[in-house]
Length: 190
Figure 1 (cartoon, rainbow, N blue to C red):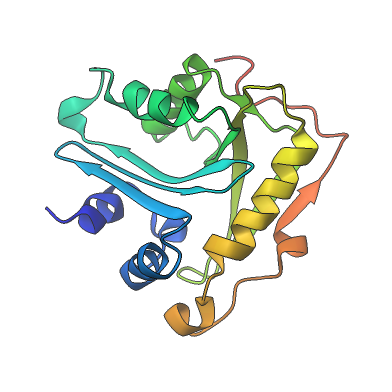
Figure 2: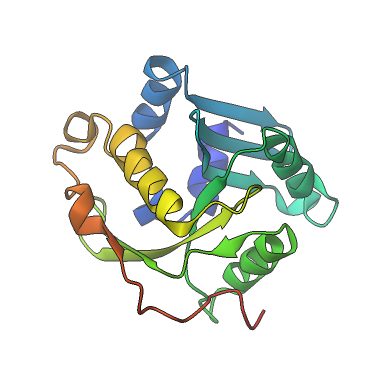
């Protein structure tokens, strides 16, 4: 099965970039956007000087529980930069969301509690709220994570969006918000 089909079957439509968008990022942003693919995994990520953003991490059901996800993250952690990713909040009707959060917690990721992220999907026209998780090898602040997410949104998520989707995503300042009063840590009770 083609790598895009694996991602497309696993990730919700509102989180998926089009195949053309991803292929263009790999081609035109090859200095920062990368694909690591194997028989049982697909990892799409952006690596900049200051941080790494995991766009998609897929491990096939056949290979789960065998340490493959851990090995993929360890490879990125050796670069000694903050690693950032987006996750859905826990959905008790979808047991994968809780398993995914527990996996990232075991891997040393923290919830960026002060960062709110909500983007209107061009596929469904509905607002999709996500949470930001990060791994900070040098105790980087949530402010750095916030700035890194803004950069990711502008360099990766909205790259040529009008060409690929016939419309533009919202400006970054509408999508990402800092809220120091937000207190609910997504990973606390897992």
